[in-house]
Length: 270
Image (cartoon, rainbow, N blue to C red; front, top):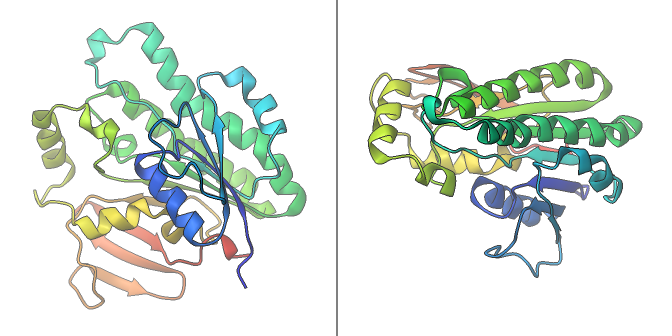
């Protein structure tokens, strides 16, 4: 029988976060969804969901926020912002905001929630980074924060991993969310060509897998798992890009390098 976990998902009301919320609900877990508002949230009345209205730019209030929560088993730092502004036109207030939400808030949540995880010797932390943190991005401050989030993941993994807390990151390519919609189509095409040397589109199947965090990232790795969806991929054993499959993970080679995908062992791995 699967253990029911308490899962906190920031920005779990839409986009990738909503997909993650749905996956954890389907698996039977209790999900605490944190967002600035829930106007269009489709799961308001679901018995396994508790909504927490909070603005993550308020870093100082995070300790009090966490104090009101039960002991969280799984943290998904999914919430983030992007302004898609040219670097010459970035006002300081926007720089401060993107740093608070994309970097400071995840660090503060990990800091506050990890205490209870350490006490029971179990915890799963997943940070939603981006391929932008590895290859650069037209919104330079978005890319900077995602690169910082990847480094933060590696640092926390080294600190918390030996004590039973698994810390991973997802570094996905473009996913059709509201955030992506603010980028001009011309720049999207340019960015895709730069990130995929072969110039081939990302298979929809891999994007769907990337949106299902529970299946992919909450395994038993002792360090961060960076999943970079750049394509082109073949998804069948024996395909030219498939290298190895075993009990824990797939290892896949694409034009951009080597990538790891964890199988659906998920939060029930002890």
